[in-house]
Image (cartoon, rainbow, N blue to C red; front, side, top):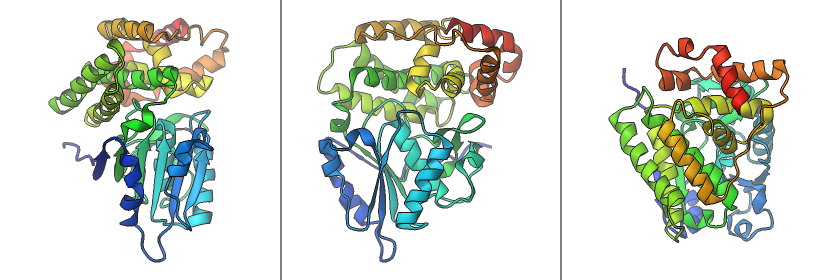
Length: 356
């Protein structure tokens, strides 16, 4: 049976579109259900953007700290704060920030309507009830979190997303002005997340015309952004590359870099984009042309890629890293086919990690 996956119901795109948020949210407010919970990256606390967030009387503003990627315990904590301030069903949840903040907002919107801990729902299609209305507003571009059906979380036993049709945002606001001042290094890592998952999608066994159409365009835009001169249009191109790149894996999957990155993030605490770059840097045997382009992009961006990050790990830490990675079966199958376990035994995976 073909997957009948959901897409974002509404999208606003354009410079200055951030200022339409209040108007958009007004349509969702009802008597007795008029509170909106804003989940905003705390890097903007005290910054000009904070004064532009349209917080009304009765709304809730939660500053989100994503110095480390969201943990299920943090999701549960933030959900409790949102519930205490706005009840079980606020008018909406709005995530303003990079991929981690948007994933956090998606997870909170799900946990307000589903019982237990967010750790209970790490996996595929475990969410039973529709989320609270939720809006994504990216201030970094590359992860595709604004369009994906997952909220990636680190739990007590694994790093794995809340992968569900209910996870997808109801509304997205794409304002290129919001990503203009992103630090260059952070911009590179999030942009490379897009580049890498497009390479993985386009070279995967799940590839189809739907994924290829979005992935090819996203890849071309990444090349324009990271292999060409930076212009005022670069932010617009990067924002659309992220959106199209996220769409490219809706009907396919990512691959070896993401599968190994999950293990790196779980054991070493590397952020998602950085973990992908650490992994992809050593994957010439799987993606030779993509890795060559990636190296050129890093050189042009002036980014020295981290190396030797797995040096000094204990045997138990290495085993745990491999356990997390090998738990990402759909990613490995997309990369290596249905008999992927024969092609990626533990000793081969260990050798990959030792190179990193």
